[in-house]
Length: 309
Image 1 (cartoon, rainbow, N blue to C red):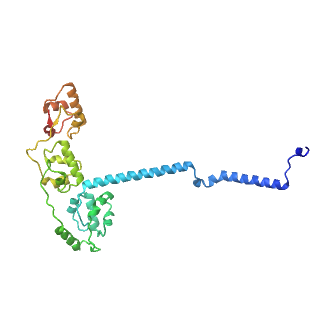
Image 2: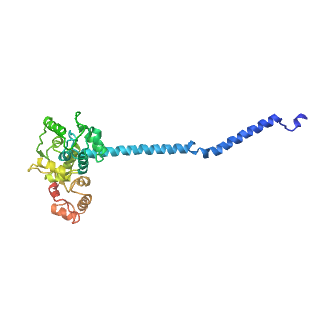
């Protein structure tokens, strides 16, 4: 019994071992406290993981937005351009205009060539600051640079380029431009007109349907994307059947959405017509319609020929 009552006594070796263990524990605690401040950027935490995921998501969203923007710009370029096979070393200013480039783009190309610049490959054309990625994507399949083209296109020695242009004109099929009745022509016929791509033709067809037919060719100027240069290029080939009767829009029986779909009627006009029909009854004729709309909402005079009562 007396042995159990003796105090707990460590030997000298046990005391040394215990002290060593305590020192190791203290060192580990110190490292745990001070190492984050020394290597803060290297410590991986769940907060860092969340931040990394957010940055990755932002990058993905930005990539998608950029891709959508590029597609939109390419669609816009396709609707504006009228591509055909061309050699950028021998194109004249009028040829560039026929291709559909803007004045700024043409000026950049002509200045580049005037200073001795030449296009040895398709990628050289892409390097011009005035040619966007979208424009290049549309024109790239049509760029034709002869394999044997000389490495210099100085202003005084363009014989090779001119000869190529002449040969190209001789061998290419000359397409006859048809005379087009814009109320009867289909999309394939429209596409044979100069400077009209498929997107522009689709817009013309859609606008013709909304109108109920064209009364005169000047109405083509109202189509979105129809600038003066494009209109003047196709105007000589446009005709209208004098006996054509446009599709009529019934003022009194058409619903709100149908009336609003006509290009010559806006929201306020349709709202005024609807209020009158609900309170007074049918609109009798054009003069009464003008009274209903009031002086603040005077419609296009051509609208009269599209309405029925």
